[in-house]
Image (cartoon, rainbow, N blue to C red):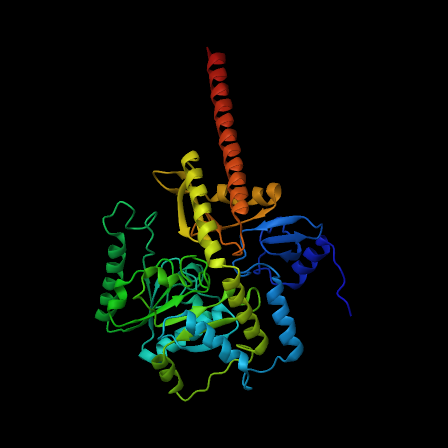
Length: 445
C-alpha cells in the first residue's frame, strides 16, 4: 500500500495528535515540511529549495547516490541479526581502526550516539571499578537516563546533579572564568580539573573517567590516572578539516582511552560505535555478562558506513571542510568588524559559531536577535540554521561537508543584510523616540 500524500496542515495536525509534544520541530511556529533532499539542499512540498546549515548528520550530503546505492544493494542481499557471522562488520572495523590511533583497536557497534556514550560509561566504570565522572559544564552526551545524569545541559533542568558527577568549567575564553586576556587559559582550565580531582579524592571517592566532547578539551587532567572518553559524535569523520578526529587537534601524542562515534557515521542511517583499547575491552568481557546489540553493526549499517568512508576520501571532504570552513570563518570575522552585535567568532573546519551580544563589553547574550536572524534566514532567504549555547545566542554552522564557497558567501551576505536592517531599525526607533521627546518638551514650554 502506497503512502498517501498529506497536506502540510494535515501533517501538523496529525503530529500534534500522535507525536509526543516534547519532540520539538525546528521552527516550531512555522515548520518547514521537507519532502526530499540532495547534497546540501532541502526541498519542501512546494519544491522550494533551502540551504541546509544544520544537518551535520548527513555528513557527505543528503541522499548521496553512493550511500543509497550501497544501502539498497546490501538490503537486497542480506540484513540480519548481528550475532550471525558476516564480513561487513569486521571489514568496517578494520577501516575505522586504520583511521584511529593504534591502541584504539576494539569496537562495539550500536545505533546512536546516546547508546555509544552509555556503553562508554559502562566500559569505564567496569575497568576502573569506580563510578564517579567528571564532565564539562553545559555538556550534553545523550538522552538516556545514564547520560542525562552526566549532562549539565539537561540535569540542571531536571532532577539536578548526582553526587557521583563532578562538573568542571567549560574552557571558554570568551565567557569563561579564564578569558582571552589570560596568559595561559588552557593551563588555568586544566588546573581547575586537577583541583576538582583532588577535592573528589579528599572525599574518599575515585574518578572513573573524564567525559568531554573533543573540541573544548585540555590535556593536563590526563597526566593523572583517569580514563578520558572523547565524544566525537558531532565532530568526527573529518568535520574539523585538518584532522579526521577532533581530539587530534590536541597533538599527535594525545590519544583518548575511549572514543564514541555517531551522527555522521551513517549519513542519516542509525549507526554509532565505541572504540577502545584491548585492555579496557578485556575488563568488560571479564565480568562474564554477555553484551550484544541486535541491530548495531548489522550488514546494511556497515555497508553504509564503508560507503561514507569512501565518499569522504574520494571527494576530499576533509579538504573541503578545511578550505570552505576557513573561508567562512574569515567572512564571519570580517562581518564582526561591521556589526557590534557579533561578539565572538569561533570554531574550526565546518563546525563554526558566531555569538551575538547586546553589549560587547558586558557580553550580554542577544538571544532574541539570534532567534530573529535564524527565523528571517528561513523565511526570506530559504536558509536553515540553528541557534545554540547556554543562552541560545550562538548561530551555529554545521552543514553537510559538501557545503561550498558560494554557499558560505551567500549565508554571510544574508546575515549581513539582516543585521544591517536591524541596526537601521533600532537607529530609526531611537531617532523617533528622540524627536517625540523634543516635541513633548516643546509643548511643555
